[in-house]
Structures are given as structure tokens and as C-alpha cells.
Length: 326
Image 1 (cartoon, rainbow, N blue to C red):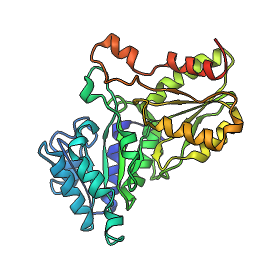
Image 2 (image 1 turned 60 degrees about the vertical axis):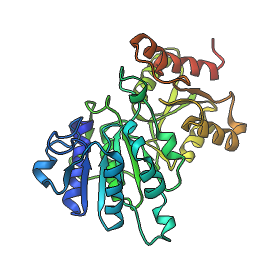
Image 3 (image 1 turned 30 degrees about the vertical axis):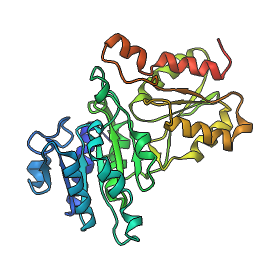
């Protein structure tokens, strides 16, 4: 095993796949000469050249459309959005073309394309740069949505995403790129659609994904001091969603808290809560609790942002609620 940063795991995954398959290329703003806005493509221009690591204009709709056309013609593009907030400009290409091309062509065209970049907030960046769109993309048949929380999962899942013949939304975080973790020296690939139990427990199930899992771990440390043993499920993929892992855990702990960095209405946690009450209602000893951002745009003020963002205190309170503790 070796220790790498999250951004280095991303570089390794893309580079290994590009060495394996010459049809793979990377394009996006600042991915080449600048080594990526967050250095998540560092060194790739030097190795693969300007025909396979391509700097684009600030024109997300344009270069996303180019990638869709390239995928239809046998290539396997990786599109980097500097942030998924900017992907809104390219939503027509992603939703109307990439996600639907296989069905609309009667499977004459596959769509082996990865859209990747940071999602969610990164501190004081204001309302328009602090949005989480995983539920938007997960609402679209034809797309897979992957959100890793650590370097090991990031590398293994990104390699799987690049090899997939359907479009994959691969969502990272500006605040995770410097996170360090261990990965194997050799090649490995993780399956898309399989959740991971990051911590086993008996008293309550906490389901989450992405960087917010850091707050979940902090919360479980405080809960352990109270004698509460929480199980943490990292979804890793929100479409397809591993309901079996969630249901198995809930049937053991009989309580569920879902934590996500997103608005509450029509969210991933809404779907999870519905599925659990539908498929495991008799196993629940309390209503499902959710910890999300408030249903308002992200504030810029640091004091207001602290109140807006889900944190360990709110997670502990949610666990207390489902365990009927004050």
C-alpha cells in the first residue's frame, strides 16, 4: 500500500486507463497547461500530449457536445468541469443527449463518457458556487452517479467509470483533493453501485456519501462516548443505489439517519427514506431522520455558513432523536 492525496488518486486512475486504451482522452478548462484547476490532471499533458489532454475555452455546452459526439464515434472522453456548478450550462448535452443516446438509437450508439469535477460547497464561495446536484443527475435514467469519499474509492471507482459503456457523473470535492489515504500499489477496480460499510455498529445506521462523511465520523466518536454504537454506510454511488446494504443494516439497528450535503426537497435522502419505510417499515423503531442543508441558498457569511452546513452536532442530535434521547 502507498499513501496518496485524493487528487493523485484521480490522476493515477485516468493515466492508467489512458495508457491502457488510446481512445480515452481528457478535456476541460485548465486541464492541460495548468495541470488542472485543482491539480487533478498534474503531469498528464507531459505524458499524453495536447491531442489527448485538451484545454478548452470557457464553453461547457460546446466542449460537452464535442465529447458526446466523440463518444458516439468510438472514443471514451473524460470531461472535467471546474465545478459542477458550471455543468448547468451543459445540462442539455448531458441530460438530452448523453443520457438518452443509447435508448434513442436503439443501442446503435453507446455513450462511454465520464463527467467529473467537484460538487457541493467549499466554504465561503457564495450561493452560486456551493450547490450539490447529485439528485438532479440521479433523477435521470441513463446516467450513473458516483460520489467517492476517499482516495481508495476514488481511484477504483473512476477506473470503473471510465470503462463503463454508459455515461457516468463522477463527483468530487474541492475540500477533498488534499485528503490522504492508502491505495494498493497495483491496479484495482471497484464496482459501481456497491455501498461500503465504513464502520460497523448495532444501535443506529447512518447513511451518507461524499465529503460530508467526515462530519459523520466526528459525530460517531462523540456518540461512542455516550455508549451509542453507530454503523456508517458510505453509498459511494447514488445511482444505482445499493438499497440492499441499507436495508440489511436497518434490519439490524432498527434506526436510520441519512446525512447529505444538499437541500432536503426531492433529495437522495428523500428517496432512501421512502424506500426504507416501504421495504422495511416493520423493522423501524423510530421514523427515519435526515440531516441536510436548510432549504435556502448557501450564505456567504462565515457565521451563517456554519449554521447552514450539516455538522457533527446536527448529526448527533438526529441520532438522539431516533433513539428517543433528549
